[in-house]
Structures are given as C-alpha cells and as structure tokens.
Length: 356
Ligand SMILES: *Cc1c(COP(=O)(O)O)cnc(C)c1O
Image 1: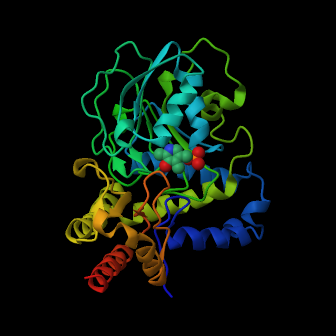
Image 2 (image 1 turned 30 degrees about the vertical axis):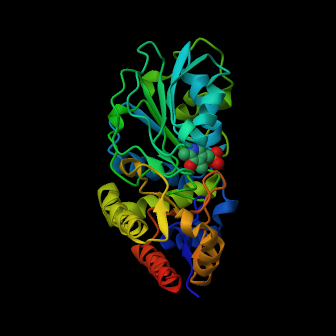
C-alpha cells in the first residue's frame, strides 16, 4: 500500500535527497570510497560544504555580512548557544509554544529574560500580537513556526533590537527577509536533511560582543572561521542537505515552495472547516502551513481512535496529534506532495460518509 508520510520530524525528504545520499554512501564523488568513509577535510567534502553554504545564501537571498554554519547538537543546543554568544544583560522572548518556552528557560542561565507575551494560558492556540519589545534587550527571540501547536508567524516582524528566530520547521517553506534577522537557526530534520544537523545563519557583526568567556565549541566565531570544519561535522546530513537545496533550486526556490505549501494547506484547512466531524485547533489567522492540527468536534470526539485507525488503513503515517494537543496533526513539509494531502482529505470525506 502507498504510504503518505505526515511525520512531524524527522519527516519526509525529497526522493532525490534519499537516492543521491544512498549513492554517495556507496561511492562518494566517483572516488570509489563511501561518503561515511572519507575525511571531512578532503577536497571533495569541502566542496559539498561550500556548495551547501552558497545555495543556502542564494535560496534565502542572504545579504552580505552574514555567515551560514552547520553544527551538531540540534536546535535544542541553540537554545543555550544563542544566549551564550549574544546575551550580555537582558533578552526578550515571545512564548508561543513548547520550543519557545524551552529556549527561554535556557536564556535565564545567562541573564535577565523578559517574556514579552505568551499564549500559554490558551494552550498556545494563537500567536500574541500586541506586545512591547524592550529597547534595551540584547535580542528578541521568536519561534516562527510552532511545530507542536500548529501556529505560524506569517510575516517577518519589525524588531527594534536584534531579531533571533528558531526556524526549525519552516525554513525554506516561504520567502524570508533575512535582513530583518540577526540570527536564524534550526534543526535540519523537519525540512532539509536527516537528524544530526543544525543550521545557523548569523550576522557577523553581532559576534564577539559579550564579555563572558565562551567554550570554543560553543562560540559561533569558531565555526564561522573554520567554515563548519573546526571538528568533524555531521558529514552525511550535510551531504543530504545539499541534495535538498539542489532540489529546491531546481523547483524554483522558496517562492515556488510557498505556492505549493499554501495550496496544500488551503486544501486541508478547507476540508477541516467543511467536514462536520472535524475542527481546527488554532486561531485561523495564525494557522501553520507546515503543521496542521485538528480534532474531532465534541459530538464526535469518541470517534477519534476509529478515525485514526481508518486513516492508517488508508496509508496515512504520522497523523496522531502531539500529546499536548491531542487529535491529529498532519505535517505538510516541502517534500510532501499535494497528492498526499488529497488522499488525507478523501479519507476524511469517506469517514464522514460512514458516520452520517
Ligand atoms: C523540532 C524542533 C526543535 C527541536 O529540535 P532538535 O533538533 O530536536 O533539538 C526546536 N524548535 C522547533 C521549532 C522544532 O520544531
């Protein structure tokens, strides 16, 4: 049976990424040696890093004065690396979900943290809009897409202080005005590559300003200076990321991705709104294009396990909602074809017919 992969992360990757990486694992760059068995300092691998950085800059239209680095440790390590490198006295955070709140918790180890707004009281079903960013903060941290709760910031906000964003689950899903950000980071396993790789886009002039000592490995300057090759980086995920970036470019880049993602999300949200069994869980204007959360209406709530089984029998994979939301979550990342969303919509329609 055909499987439709709606996993939230790690998640679906382009077929080309998987196939090309398998080939390289067997024979890297025609060398007769596998990708996992060559030096990360070989000319061929350095070329992989350089091309990945160049495509990152090209596809996101990153202005001069920014560096792109590849690290290990996941987005979660960035929760502490960001304040380690940028927080001198005070930082501001917008609390829009589990990840945002975890990021904020780490920052408290380094200085004063101001939570400018939070939607925790409503189980993060919306993104707070009217708040004041303290002008004396070293930076303002946001999570552009809240993977667990299914909300997303649809514009690049104006911040009077350096803007830092966790873009783990919406990087390359839409155009971004990088010039508005001082630092963008994320785990690669949602929209780019297998787990084990973290990307950081950082404005060079922000580094080296804090007075504290920073351990070498946690200092962004180390990795900027050494072009992500200070120590052994996650070689296979970087290679896979390069394949995804090439795929993105060939398809037309982030504008084309945004168009496709919008189409997929519109299709599914329209069905959630139309189908009498289901309803969305978040404020309509904040609905994520990447993680679409929905539950069954109260009247039908007891049918949730049955719908889940029905969907599984139709080839749907990974649509169980996160335990903090319940119901269902369909992750519709870049590599997910529209056909998969259409199959889920059809499944929802058939289930409605069966139950009316
Ligand atoms: C998945 C995710 C994380 C955690 O990523 P790790 O790489 O597992 O540390 C952080 N932030 C967001 C928005 C995520 O979706």
